[in-house]
Length: 137
Image (tube, rainbow, N blue to C red; front, side, top):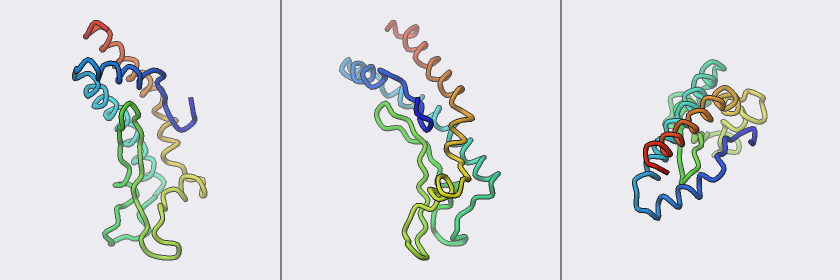
C-alpha cells in the first residue's frame, strides 16, 4: 500500500465484469466508495481547521482550503482532492494547499489518510462481503 492511497487489488476487474452483466452493482460500489472516501475528506477538513489553515485570500471569491477538500470517485478509484487555488500574488494561479502538504510540513491530507486507513479498509471489506453474500457472487 502506498503511503498516500488505499488500494483494492482486483476491484477494477470486478467492476468491469459486473458492468458487463448490466447490473447496478458498479454504481452501488462507486456510491459506497464515495462514502468511504468522504470520511477521509471529513478528517482532512478537521485536521486543516485544527492547524489553522485558511485561504490566503480571505474575502475573495476563491474556494477556501477547507471548503476545497472534496471526495471523488472515478471508476474503481476513490480519492480526496483539494481544489483551492490562489489567484493573486507572485506565481498565481497555483494550488497553495500543496505548499502546506509537502513544503511546509503541515500535512492534512496524508495525516487524514493515516488516521482513517484502517477504518476505510474495514469498510471496503464489509462492502465486498455484502456483495458476495447479498448478490451471490
